[in-house]
Length: 194
Image 1 (cartoon, rainbow, N blue to C red):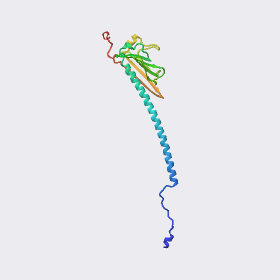
Image 2 (cartoon, rainbow, N blue to C red; image 1 turned 135 degrees about the vertical axis):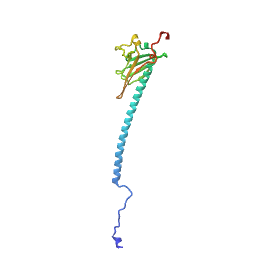
Image 3 (cartoon, helix red, strand yellow; image 1 turned 60 degrees about the vertical axis):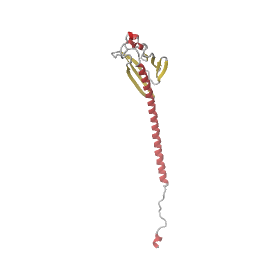
Image 4 (cartoon, helix red, strand yellow; image 1 turned 45 degrees about the vertical axis):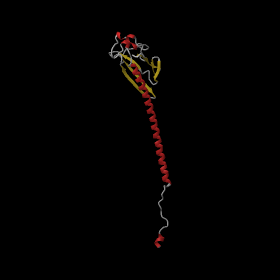
């Protein structure tokens, strides 16, 4: 019994909860990780928004260039290039549509189909864009500033080059291609075809 009396009456007992210092450390860790996650999510959202803006810009540029390329490929005969310039091309299709593509102002690309005007793009850089006309020897037909193709020059057009530069919000893309009109590739129209 004496041995029993010598033992202390109190013993350290393990508790089932957290101490105050442990809870403060956990709250601080959650706060730090939460602020890092919020920063990463904000950066991710900004990157996504910029990527979507680039995607819309490229889609608009591709769509307008594709439409312009398609319409210029439907030219019926060389004589229809008369009065075309480096900023404007005249097209007359086999179905009787008259089409005029024009680089206007500083950033507009217009397409007029049988008198009905359509704005293809508002992001073209018209000082860096142009239409050029090439002979069968692939030499560019020189058009003096402020003038257009004459009747004799239009008869020498073998193919056309479209060079359009687009810019929006610091993004720039340039499309450049040769157009060999469907109806011209088979040669000169004979008088008895008219």
